[in-house]
Amino acid sequence: MSLADRWAGLLMRTGPDREKQNIIWNMTGSFCYAFASMVLAFLVMRIAGEEEGGVFAFGYSTLGQQMFIVAYFGLRPFQITDGAGEYRFGDYLRHRYLTCGLALAAGACWLLFCGYRAEKAAAVFLLVCYKVIDGFADVYESEFQRSGNLHLTGKSNTFRTILSVSVFLTVLLACRRLIPACAAAVAAQAAGVLLFDVTVMKRLSPVDTGGDFCRAASLTRAGVLLFVSVFLDFYIFSAAKYAIDAHMDDASSGYFNIIFMPTSVINLAAGFVIRPVLTYLTDYWTGKDYPSFDRMLRRISALVAGLSLLAVCLAWGLGRPVLGIMEEILGPSYAGGLVRYHMPFVVVVAGGGFYAILNLYYYVLVILRRQKVIFGIYAALTLLAAALAPALVKRAGLFGAAWAYLILMAVMAAGFVAGGLLACIRGKNSKEVCG
Image (cartoon, rainbow, N blue to C red; front, top):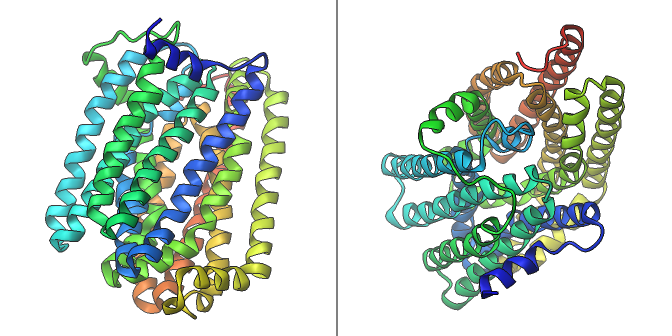
């Protein structure tokens, strides 16, 4: 047995209870990914200063994440709910080659015309590369989940994140410069995909790796509305950050990213609840077991809403001391810089709660294959975001950005809940899943 076979066998091992391992590793992977997203910009601010921290925050969590969405084309929910095997893994993989190339080209074009200084443009492009590789890994992780091996998705998320973040921070601490650290992180991310995704997939049976690029056109048609919808979703989600980058300084991007961190915790907790039940909701709906579908949807909705409300209460009661502790960790030069944003902090957390709720009903609409409804909601909210976020940021700075985020998330959540419930009613009456 080769070394690669032993390595893949070690990663694929689950023990007697695969379902339990699926849950544990999904939670672990989601936690590692969200934790890294939360704290990296904070650590960059501490190590390299507020300006570099702001550049990293925008490149990693805003433009880089937007290009991640281009790379993965919104196909994860489509792929993991493709239980009938309409498309082979090889079809998804070849499609991902094309979308990753498109994402890199789109990121480069943005940076050519945005007017950044050379150092900022280079750092942001490297972060785009990092996120595009993450988007490439997603096609493997989605296939792991589709084949019932969610534990492999969690392991990939966990180990890739630990590897790339460790390398990034080591280089950043050694040289105190963002560009070399980002370059090292890109290399580590590529190595992680090879070690934890490609190697395992080659030995996972029965995964059909056959396919051709001709199927990419069909897959693009099937997923284009989902892609445009997810792309617009992230623009709406990040409209306040784009407005800060356009109308304020890099340090402001860093500060807003810090008060934005709890939204990752909320989404992480919601993901723990939502992801494991997606296949059950899909099976109940396709099997026309509507009472079970309704019961599970009600339970998950109540749980996500309860977690969101708890998060807002904690932000209100503990926000000031938490922000004060973060100031002390950042250093004396940040004294008073975060506590003054306590109210925006609470407002952002409330917006994160609405985003968690709308995510659940987004998946409901995907299961029902109501792509047109999803697209309609996002199209309307994009217009609102493009007008509202810049106006509020110019008027009230970070306070305005926080309120823009809350308003957009609340309106979008209302649209998704109403659309999801109406689609369920119509689907049951017509006995149709697609439409």
